[in-house]
Image (cartoon, rainbow, N blue to C red; front, side, top):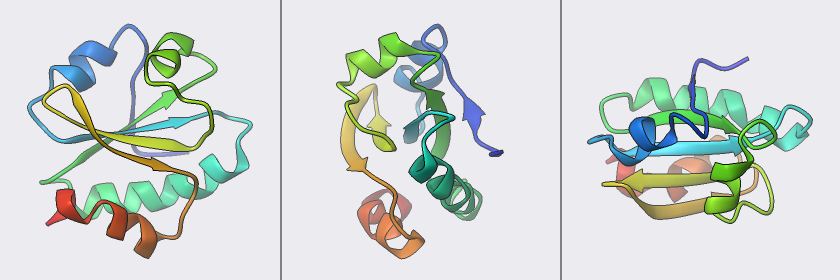
Length: 108
């Protein structure tokens, strides 16, 4: 479905919190239509800006602990992490130009 790396509750700390890169975590679920709609857009952004941001996916159904830790109440939810901290949150599926505008500070 997506080229993005999957992270889990078990790998979240190493893959996201301890990374020296800027990481966008896409919190999603298999049954979520808007999540499936935004996935190819995130793949495009990831390939176009691979030097600036890494995009990973976390299935909230399979990894409830991470979803709870970051108060994920609606999906798709995208959180940008830098240095182990959430620096930006984007909620909901959006067209590519809107997502790029939301993420502009990380893609520049």
